[in-house]
Image (tube, rainbow, N blue to C red; front, side, top):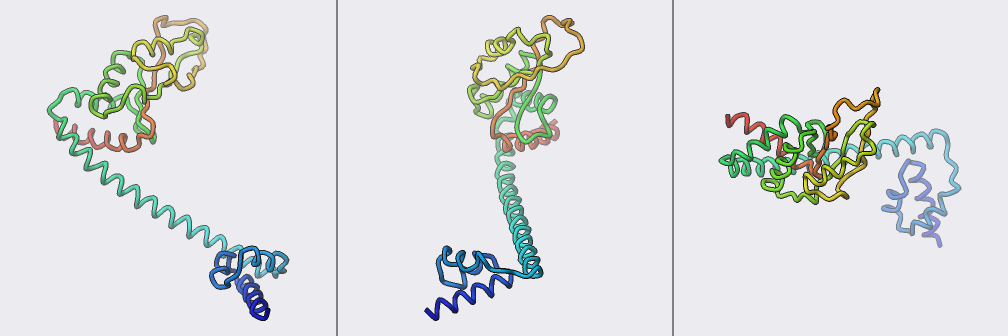
Length: 222
C-alpha cells in the first residue's frame, strides 16, 4: 500500500513539473487507468497550467519538425530513385522519335505546377496520340486514366462526354464531373466545339518528376 502511495505522490509531482501522461507512465509503473484516476482532480496553479501548456506546445512543434524532416528525407530518396530511372529511360527511348514527340507535347500542353501528371487540350487527334504515348512509354492503360471535360454552358445537354469516349476508346466511368464554364451569350459561336478534355494519371507525382527530367534532357539532346 505504501508503494502505491509513493507512486501516486511521484505521479502528482511529475505532473506539476509539466510531464505528459505518457512521460509519467515511463517513470511510474502503474496502469494508465490508475494514473488518470489519480490526476483527474489534480488542482494546478496558473503558473503550472501555463508551464504544462507551453511544454505541450513545444512537444507538438518538435514533433512537427521531426515529421517534416523525415518527410523531406523520404522525398529526396524517392526523387533520387526517380532521377536515375528517368535518365535510364531517356537513354533507352532516345532513338525513338515518338518518345520525343510525347515529351514535347507535355512540355507545351501539360500541367507544370500541379502535384499530378495531366494534360488538357481540345484537339482529339493530339490527345489520342498522347494516350498512345502513355501506353507505349509509361505502360499506363487507358482504363487507368481519369478524364474531365471543360465546356461552356450552351453545350451542357449535348453529351459530348460520349464523343470523347468513342474517340479515345476510354470507358465512360473514367470521367470525373464535367465542369461547365460560364458564357455571356447563349449563342454557340463554334458549333463543332467539343470542349477541352483533361487527361490525368492518378498517383503520378513520380511520373511528373520524371517528365521534368526528360524535358531537360530533351533540350540538351537537341
